[in-house]
Image 1 (cartoon, rainbow, N blue to C red):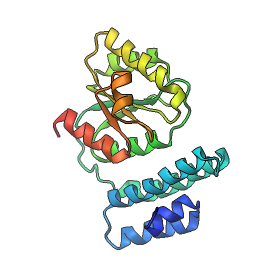
Image 2 (cartoon, helix red, strand yellow; image 1 turned 90 degrees about the vertical axis):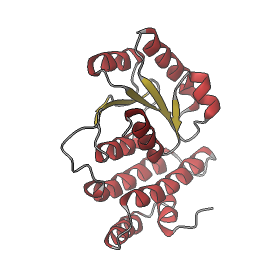
Image 3 (cartoon, helix red, strand yellow; image 1 turned 120 degrees about the vertical axis):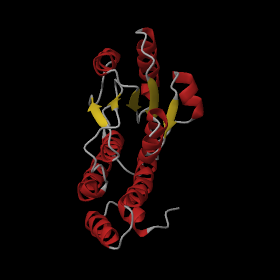
Image 4 (spheres, rainbow, N blue to C red; image 1 turned 180 degrees about the horizontal axis):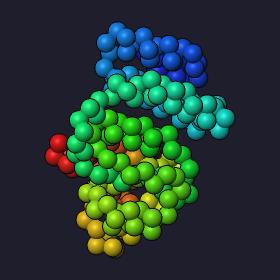
Length: 207
């Protein structure tokens, strides 16, 4: 049950409410990451309503647009003032899945935290992941997935990365991901929220 007015407004797709509250909270000194977390709670509820059939694809797209608007306001406040990069991270949505909202939020937060992010986009074949990792020598790769049907694609991608002799750490992210999925596909870490993804990066890079 959502108790926060901002996460509620997000779940109800009340765009003006969401943007007004984001600005208000920023002005009131609330930490930008806290605001992102609250927005994400609303997004999780949107995902739940979509899965239960209460919301359809159009609502999902609208939620994405509202979230994007909110992140546009928040991005300049998410830090990352230092000119130095802590390291490179490759990230993409696995083959067969075209959802990029979660991925885009993670990228924004990682950039804000000072990482260089190589975004492969959505519906990314395993070869592209391998290629990007060989080129960048990135010690961490993030794979985003929203559809349970794309689990096999994720597993195959991780196998391809290992098969290419890359000892890159793999973090998988998505709203249904858990320890069981992580073990099944062979990932090193899993994240259910964007802030989890940033924590994983900090661990891998020792930052």
